[in-house]
Length: 381
Ligand SMILES: *Cc1c(COP(=O)(O)O)cnc(C)c1O
Image (cartoon, rainbow, N blue to C red; front, side, top):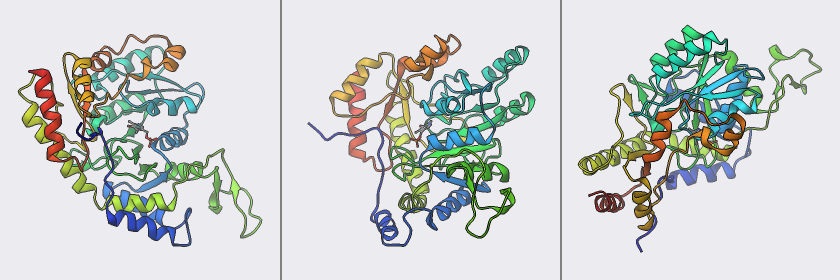
């Protein structure tokens, strides 16, 4: 049997390893100089003013919601085709969630549907406080449209860009926050760059930056302008109820080293996507469609096939780690128990019947990709 090909995997160079080992020999394993350096490097890359590195994108989504004031009585809307963290973050804050259906071609939240739902919600006085569009597979949502709806209906925007560091929208880096309040990245090993576990929130708003920085570390500040008393140079103050969501120095060092490789990772992913497009185009399946305004980070390469189980089992049978991203969040038992069966997401349900994620990562070799393509040719002819 040929070796196992996962759907996604990290790429770790000798330089990455050396950068982490250097930190292990240094004075600080946490709360040292490397985390701010990593934050600066992501800000320089994206063009955002501020960055807050944390221990996961899930943590970043949580403190992003809190910084925007999400709490009991509020509603947050996100995409049904995402990882559960995109909606769990609102529940952590005591808010409720609802799901806006996807565009069947891009798998991203559909702006026309968002507008329709806002019109309805306005009449019922139930407009969302925050909308969390997810840049599915690495391709940006139609942020200009979503941003204009946010002005019309008064909601805030957190971009869940867990799939899409290195991607662009209208020529600018995803994460610049031109069309949102906060953007969140994930650095889990299957994502574009990795810190093992890790996440980061970018923003151009100084007060959101300060709130997230405090929430990352127990709600504690040493910034005198935020304190109500000062007992001396040792003094710090807990001004909010925060968490220990800090990233370690080793993680930040790995992230910093990976940032240097980010553009080459994206080039490799585009090369693999072009290979798939070329060889799969004539088969009985749908290849992912790309919007002119977007340059995808290609976290995932998602095809849609008529008979999903058949093709999926063929791939798995050949030791190819095909996957499905995602089971619609509202179909998860926890969500079904909480909200009942939702009827307003027909495109998401239909997408879920047909979608398969093929292996896609920067070190995917031509031979490995050839194997994937062969299996698809055999099972779809
Ligand atoms: C991976 C992922 C997350 C969670 O990221 P972690 O860093 O593992 O917490 C959130 N949203 C989306 C869309 C993801 O793909």
